[in-house]
Length: 519
Image (tube, rainbow, N blue to C red; front, side, top):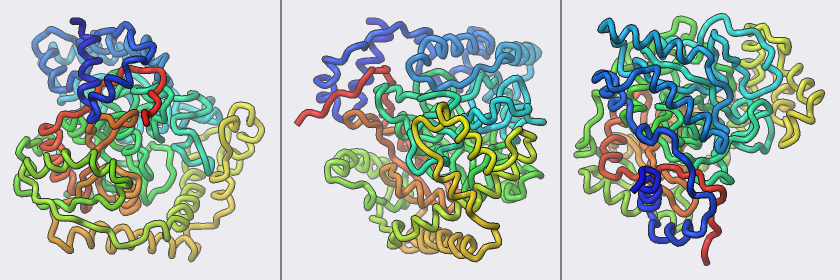
């Protein structure tokens, strides 16, 4: 049996509704394709390091393999915006260092991709997917997290597509679409939503086009594409990871984070990314709250005795709850003490406040960024005009209502902004995650990965991790672990233990269209 056929069989078996999937996929067309270098499909960073240590693999050869997979497979997924022309030269340098006995970290020689709103001072662009920044000057220096990743020995092989301007342009949008990159496609079923805004980062990792990737999040932009594309996503505590050199939306919520196929790889990436940045004062907290190595918290028995609040109130229909029941049983079997947890605030009542805060901060933060970048378009107002002048290329899919509304906002000293910010922080922190955890003396919270739960954590600025649990019909699902600020070590421990008990990630097969539901 070929590796390709094995992958497809595992794909069907790994869905919770495996038997139904056999029937549904049996008539699907386009299920065969040449899978270049199947030996690196689902391979982990530690496995790659072992191959390079033994001399069986080099960073250059590994980079060539991933670049070839991008060339052949990404025509379907369109997740990679741009290839780094210096990728092979960087890989060669890492190989030379290894031959001299120098291995910088677990990321030494490992190819990764980063989202196209993260600055690199090289021959690649940084555009947030917008045509307005295509001709902008090359940034003067790498984003702080890029500096950290390069120092760790990572080989940045390209930039990923995203929902343009990190999904903050129109009241309605199409996840994974940008004027520069077009539409990124879901690797499971190419006609399905890849979610965003870190669409390309999630898709590329899931499709095995890279070992790992970096996404950014303001509200769900790491977690949604992670769960939707069946990968692990970590949205860190605000302040754990520097924001310097990342095109902003809102400074009270923005953060970057790792996306990977396993908790182990995500933990390796997070360890390389964290650190105190003198140019981003919020990272002062990282001095005492970060770990140099998050892999030391990987414990297959890490759920034993953990007192976790089970959040099911946002799961929705009963059939979804039924899907998660055996997964929740796995948590108990692994030794977790589960306590039913309920959030009392009605978060729909602060929806307008949340959006207003983002609009205020977007105008202020983006104008500051554009002025420092030295781009042709130096203000939000000028970007609005650019989009109107180029609406046949930029506004063909959706509008720019959020841009226009943000432009109308005043300064961050406005009472409207200050009061809205206070209300949403109180609702998500003091009356939200903090209250739920304190009520029953919990270690953390766990539950199905849903928009409401990730939004609570995002607005609070608290950490959130999602782990893939396979497919339900044509939709990838996830289990999430979240809690108080700077509890990444505990959350990683719980997430890893759960992952080891389930191992439910489904390997994408790039099926052209999702099957129609039966019944």
